[in-house]
Length: 114
Image (cartoon, rainbow, N blue to C red; front, side):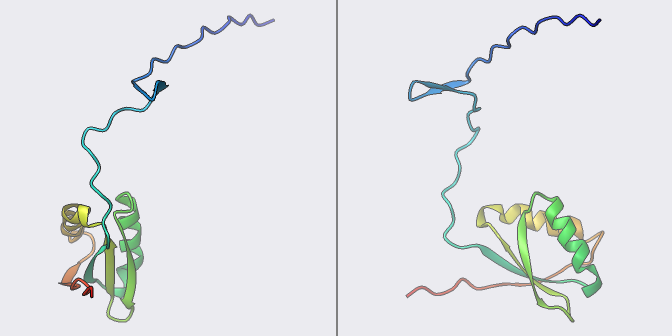
């Protein structure tokens, strides 16, 4: 017959208190920027056979952005991403050139308001 020892209760100390209620949430290191009004867009050209690989690599980078195939025969994609992640998207495209040849065509102009 097996003998089981009773488990000691684990005491969780709250990290901070909000509205007199303890929470386990860790405080943010930096404040979140305000949400953008529109997504940034970027057009790229890749080989049509590499579109699936590009999708998998983009998803592997924490869904950095999404894309739509604009022209499947020429391999032109429209990337949409948050304006706050411009630097990360450019770094991703630069690092991707060793795996999948990527040509950045141009940036889409901002739509006119009014």
